[in-house]
Length: 272
Image 1 (cartoon, rainbow, N blue to C red):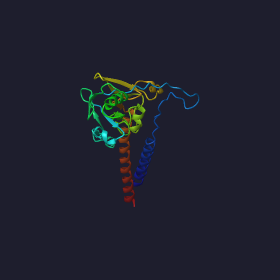
Image 2 (image 1 turned 90 degrees about the vertical axis):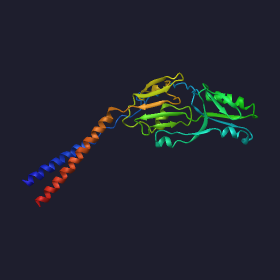
Image 3 (image 1 turned 180 degrees about the horizontal axis):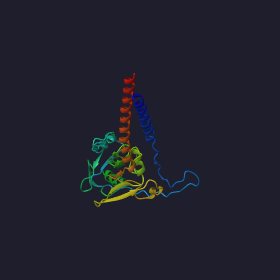
Image 4 (image 1 turned 60 degrees about the horizontal axis):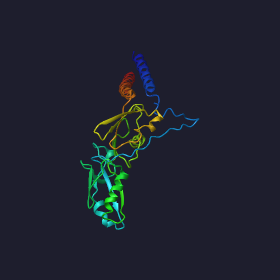
């Protein structure tokens, strides 16, 4: 009787082992971008979206550097850039962003610079702002050089990416592909054909885009180049829920196998 029980237990253990082995062999998901571009053959030429320089908005922080032959002459302006940095809700990725400095664009659209006074930058590009500040600086300094750039050109990337966070971009000419790369790319569970992009408008409204990374045509769309404060959300696919269910089933199968193994060992001990 014990011998028959031992044989049955071993058979059950063998069946469970086979089930676990086959269930752990999942097919590789298709994570390829731009599926409409052939792997070989005739090259495909795709027009790229025209880059439109972002306009300075209220609450933007602008790094403004004025230099002359005498560095000490404009030191008071350059030291007036207030420190700011990439921070989000405890995110390690955001906390590691470099701390940068800049002048806040107030509710009236102005920045207040030492010596130069208030200058309205609202609605200007960084090049237009640079020219305007240089005009003001030329009244006080001889042949000044001016640099203006965004200190808080931030983009939020959330959902099924490796490192969801708020990111301070190194420059203002950044694409959606750049942002996803900085966030560590999509996970295997991220839906590549339905990425959500929320964009703030100066009128206080938001524009919503649905982006399909399977199509190469995205590079000539208005959302290809990002604006400051853009929000990107990568939706999880149905495969993630299935993977969670599989993980639970696998754990149960492993527990059952271990329990069966214990029973088999106990049976052998009793036989001997």
